[in-house]
Image (cartoon, rainbow, N blue to C red; front, top):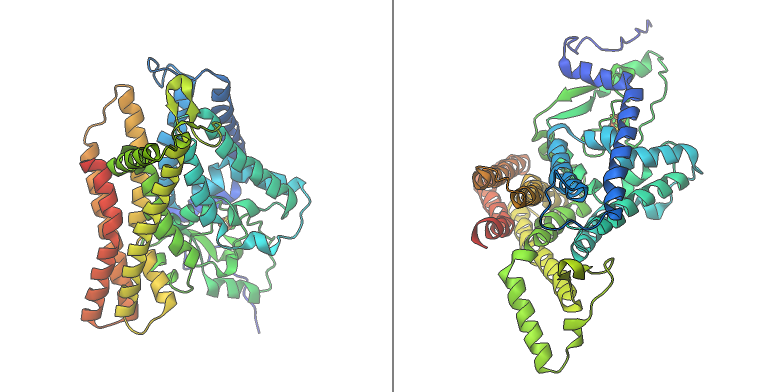
Length: 470
Ligand code: SF4
């Protein structure tokens, strides 16, 4: 039998395909990417560390006259909203090409002990738990307003990433794969990206048959490349572009992964992250400071405590690294404030999550006999709405930071309304397409869609309250 050597780019691939060229460019320019990463590390360290040594800014300064304000704006007003947006547009290119933490943990991995990854570390719940804890802790310490908690939370995460790199894996990103508090969110948003590294199994097989033995690829986030079908875990670093002539950067429908791939295996922790984390806890985090319910609960609780002669929760405070404590800025949380804040966020997560989950369960059941996998699959249809919510919340910080400096962005309300409406509609479209993979009966499909539509109501209502009613 004659064995044909498979060309690096098989005939089915158009040689002038711009995406293929970009993927290959990434693959050939890893040294440039590393330079970009270390530049980002430098910028990140300066923005993170320098403000801690400067006096807290007063009301008379602007973000272009004060470095602390500038760093705040870059971190929370520009950096995070853009990272979320780019992940939904082009996949986790932030993780693979720009993230300082990813670069540090991989570098540490190249110089560390290289131990085997323990089982406890691979528990799939870590990213969701870490996201919930950092969201809660960030609010308790006012991370968006002050440089010290920013350094503590982001810097702490970076140190942990370096430590994990030093201990486990060789030249790998064990931290990013299993522990990073935002990797769960990025993994969800990347499913919407219209770009991904596509693996062509027949071409891969053909390459193996030909006896070709290409140089091994170091996929730092430990993606099982050969069986990769989605963009969720891929960091878009480009190292595997062209491997065995079977991998290439390619376009796809932004609905494809969620409708046709995400249902293959039930991912309960992703469901929890979407429903309780992004649609509940995160919304509560952006909402509590302007919520009249919070004010009412605080007044009621304070009156009750005074009536019962218990005044210490109204007076006692904690260090800044436990609860916000900046008397010089007239910004101090009492123990009562802190307890109510935590209670508010947990209540928002539980109320929104429980309602949404119940309706999702009914929707899954309406499509036929109960299947857990179908229930978790339907939850994935909520990703556009959940992701848009967090983007709106973070961009709300951008708007308020600019407004406090006298820069009023036009059409903000209209843009918010359009974003919320489009995300809700997109989630509806995903749900409708998903129902088609489970049932051909229009009545069942319409019922399931209606129930998922109802499941979106709490999250939409929370944003409407925040932006247009309170
Ligand atoms: S699969 Fe791995 S090597 Fe390939 S682009 Fe994604 S992260 Fe990089």
